[in-house]
Structures are given as C-alpha cells and as structure tokens.
Image 1 (tube, helix red, strand yellow):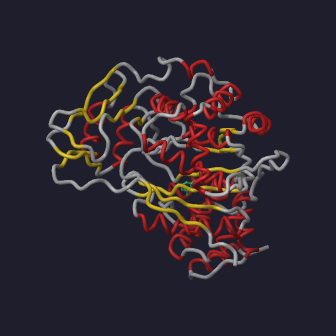
Image 2 (image 1 turned 180 degrees about the vertical axis):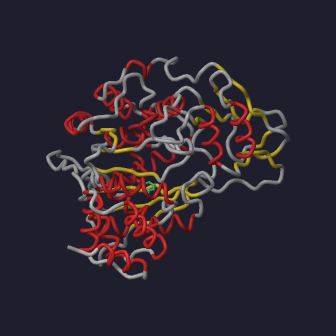
Image 3 (image 1 turned 135 degrees about the vertical axis):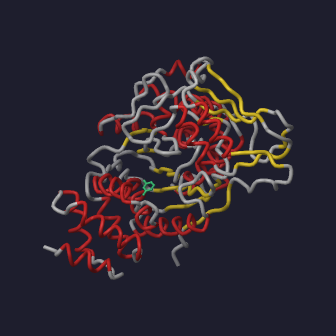
Length: 440
Ligand code: URA
C-alpha cells in the first residue's frame, strides 16, 4: 500500500508520480480512505508544478476507470463526440449531434448543466416539453441504437473520481489548471466508448480560459493524452469574444437550434455545426476529409434529414415532437425591455461573461447545481458584433419575468457591450485547428 504522505511530498517537491501511486491515490480518494484535505494538497501540487505526459496519461486513465465505462462495440457504426469548453449562447451540440447521426456516425453525448455564466445542453433540451435527460444505461443505449444519438447526464457510476475532484477543485480555487482540466474533460468523454473526439476550445472574454495561448496549450495537451489513450482527437479554437448566435436563454436557444436544423439559423451557429460536424465525420472515417464532411453536414441540415433524426431523439427521450412544429412553442416570456445603442458606432463586446451573468440575474442560470432555471427568460441580440448602429438602435431584447433581476441584467449588459465609432472589425469566429502528428 502506497504511503499517501509520500505521494503528497513527491508532488509538493515537483516530482513525478508513478503509475502505482496514481492508481492508489485515485482509488483511495473515490473509496473515501483518502480525505479531502489530502486530495486538496495533491491538487495544489499539480496546480503549481503541472504533470509530465506519462504521468498525466496515467492520471487520466485512473480517473476514466474509477467507475463504469460504456461499450457500444455492438453498434455497427463509428461513434464520435464533440466537447466544447463552454461559452455563452453555445447551443452547437443540439443541431450537431442529430446532423452527425444523420450521416451514419453515432453520438453518445454525455453533457453537463449550466453553471455560472455558461449554459448547459441538458438544461436547454429540457425546455422541450417532456424531454428527459435522466436516462439510465439501458434507455441511453436504446436511444442511441434507435436514433444514432443519446443526450444523457453524467451518472454517479461514470468517472466518480471527476465528480469528487471537480467539486473539490471548485471550492479550493484549483479549477484553472491545464492537466486537471484536460484529465477531467477526457476521462468523461472517453468513458462514452467513442472512436473519435472533436474539441471546441473557446477563447475570449466569454470563455473559461480567455487567453488563446492557454487554450492552445490545453488543446495540445488533450490531443496528446487522447491519442495515447487510443482515441484520435482534433481541436478547433473558436471565439467567445461574442455570444454565439442571436439567442441566449433556454427556449430561445431551442428555437435557434431548430432554425439551424431547418437549414437556416444564424450564420455563426451554422458555421460551427458544419465545421465541427464535418470534422467528426472525417475523424471517424465516415468521410475522406474535412471538406467532404462539411459538405455532407450542410446537406443533411438543408434536406431535413438532421431535423428528422432530432424528432426521433425527442420522442425517444420522452419529449413532445409535435412541439417542434408549433411556432408558439419556443417563445420567450411576454415581459420585454430593450437595450439600445447610446451612440452611433460598431457594436463591441468587451465582456461576454457579463452577458451570461445577465441571463443568470433574470433567473435563467444557476449559481449552484441545485438551483432551478427559468427557461423562458432570455436575451435576444438584434445586432451582431461589429455591426454599425445608429444611436437608439436596438442591441438586445431582454425577456424577463415581471421585472425580476431586470435592473441588474441591464447594468451587466451595459458592461458587456457598447458602441464605438472607432472600433476595429471583430476577429474571425474560427481561429484554427490542431491535430496529432500523423504516425511516421
Ligand atoms: N470542464 C470540465 O469538465 N472539467 C474541467 O475541469 C473544466 C471544464
């Protein structure tokens, strides 16, 4: 049995942990024989000194195998998933998963809930009447087999090490560490039993890591670790220097996702769905290259087959598929206020996190996982980043509930964006990609 104090001392002094030490530590922590204060000491050592590649691979593998993992090898198609590091208005997964499935690649998607300024895919899907995300393993498997997609939540059996470690990092200020983020994301995604993984690493003021260089380092780390664990991964770095799409808020984000599934929708949302979906098809071997993958995804959005898959997923997960065709089903609440441009100029977002916080102030987000969200409050942007506006032009409609949080939301939106006659055009939505070097 490894001496836990020796493990802590090794990391405190900047050394590398052995495979045995890592396994003993993760198992002991999950079983409860290693207390939180010892785990916090180790995480602090990792936060300060980082981890070597071999060490991080062992750490991620130990987390991955700390609970049960899915095995969909009986499903006779490639399996792939996408993960985004999160942002404001990021509803890409909702149209992307059915579009990829319509092209023959299964998407077993375990998603999270919204926390702080970012929204969660599960909360957004639950804005569809009846839609259930608390699938047990049998229901998840059935949905995936019948439709090619399943949207589920992390259960207590999947990567329990991450549940405990993430909660501890959250309360001890130890979230923003590249090895800890990489192992947390990859252990959960690789537990889905996928053959390929596309990662959307956000940068900009609405992102979790605002600096693109830190995002690139996280991307390179995740690619190395995923490939050493046998799953090819590609990273795209995309901008959160503006909210994605026009809609921020649950029902409105479902409406916008449906627009995308009908071949329309805002350009930036479609661009990311086509790009990331095309990459999933190419990486999973379903299409020979990214260009062919993109063309295929654009085709299934335009011809209605992606929407048809989504309809089946909604039905399979207990939702009311007829609501998808009801023009009144996904409208925000009736109380509305408007934020207008104070002066003429280009619309500039200087703090996209504040947009997310404004939605939270209205009741559309949560500070703690147990908080309820109001799906009908929303922010609808009438103008996009870089657009020239005259004084008094509308920037954003604020859909509130009887004034709850309205004043705070208006103040936050005032911090989030303004108009500036001298502002430069915004940076492009997509910065670039990274992949593992081809084997020599
Ligand atoms: N998302 C995760 O799943 N884990 C992290 O550590 C950070 C973001």
